[in-house]
Length: 418
Picture 1 (tube, rainbow, N blue to C red):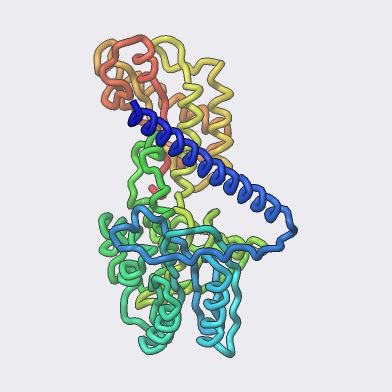
Picture 2: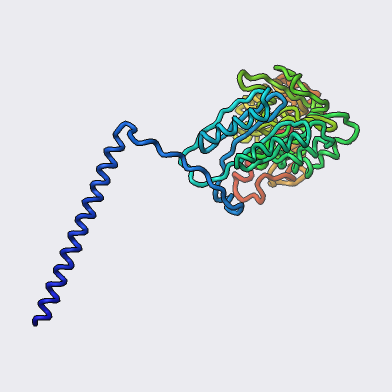
């Protein structure tokens, strides 16, 4: 009995002591919170926390830790620094290093300062042209001493590499080089072309190109046609850029350069990011978008119109329905406003009825559309008509009446030259 009473008293005392200690701890915690709140409203009585410097990570972790990217565009006259860094101290260090590399040149900087980043990689992408390998190593070593990861995109002036080899060796142009190579463009250029100018889209521009979407309304688009639209049949350096200047592509199409205030120059709507990367047989200018030939743009525009508002005919005849004539008038206006390229009017049928009759009817309908467009001012020398009958079904197999209606259609093909 006595042992039981003693044990109970011990348990009670232990519990009381524990509760008391807990109350003290809770009271301390509450005091900390209150003091912290007061300090937070004390008009910066305590210094702001220093941004946490970035720490390097293993290469295999790069995919999980998107890099912070800064850019250094190098030229004989100066260095332009842009992009993002994680601390003002690093921004200042990059500016100092640039001034040391080019004491007589101009150094400009426009950094975004990121704070509160615990873990990342700083990439410094260096682009531009440099005099020789010695100077290149000097520049790379100076920036590497700051502890950043260097992405070297410098091109040595007077290099004996061709424009295609320079693209191959320039990281930001690797994708367009792969496309040029796959399409056999280098072989197509051949030795008969003395010099060329290439407007080369960056990797991100190539990744943004949706060739499938283009083919929805320009089903015969060949990637090689698009690629050759980026090559002019002469060398044009940036010192000759001017508003409205035109160049002729290898296929004879026209490229137009325009000047945009405070931005620089654009070509066919694409900004020219980097200029005058010279090589044997030509020069490269880097652009931020893939150029689409005017003929393909026109073809897409025409087929989008008749895709949403099909050209209709009287049943079993080539006579254009009155309701479709305004549609064809819009087609004529677009063709007159965009005179580049020749138009092929394509007639297509469904599978109802004999094949030979469907073929003849599709041709007659295409010819009726051609004659209507000519009557509205389209140059007859640039337009032709062809019937495909049921050989190019859009919906196959046909199951519903709508499937058959979709297959009875007029489409357009615009090509450069004859």
